[in-house]
Length: 271
Image 1 (tube, rainbow, N blue to C red):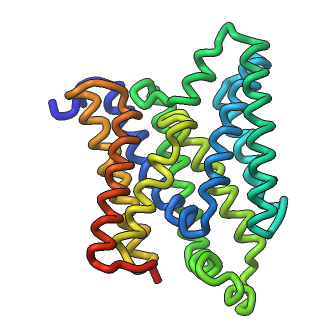
Image 2 (image 1 turned 135 degrees about the vertical axis):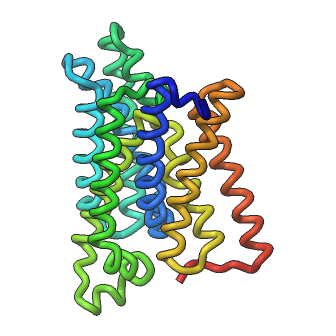
Image 3 (image 1 turned 180 degrees about the vertical axis):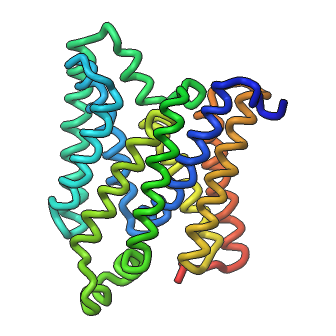
């Protein structure tokens, strides 16, 4: 059978990977547009600390992952409005979180493998329950993004004009970073905290190089994320090596190819 769909673990991987890839690409398009890639990077590592802390307390690492990631995302959105101030704050949070994560692993090593899987992901280790949760959360993220799509577009491209039109830019920042946090939290167990950009940034950056309009760019990013996941799983199944490695490598190749093609056509920034 194509792509080993006769095996349950491959069906779960395809279902979870596809849903998370689509949601991550859509959210990631605005992450790159708003230049908040560093915040997304920090949130993924904070999730690792949350997972390690939950294991230390005898709780599910996924519970700690979600709790730490979402609460930190909301905290970062309230920390400072200026980009430079926010970058410094994010750097400090990232440093502190990684230090705590190392401490938690040293204090409790009996089940350290569960926390380590958060770092590198395990897409072929997804259970049926996790696959169903991934689909539900990804769908919720897409619906939430659709609800704030128009004001978010304006606030991302021209925040001054958005404020002049009465758009609550501060509230949008809060909602969007919370949405990023939820997306990262559901994607990390699949692709890993260290490779989260393969889902979140690669397809989105490639789409921005190829599409001029925001709407088409988001749709293209979602399609590229989906194809990237299928290609990575197929390569892992037929050739070997971890699926996360293939997805990350193909994401980088996609980004390079898209930017070369975009420059060749004289493509500018999306409108």
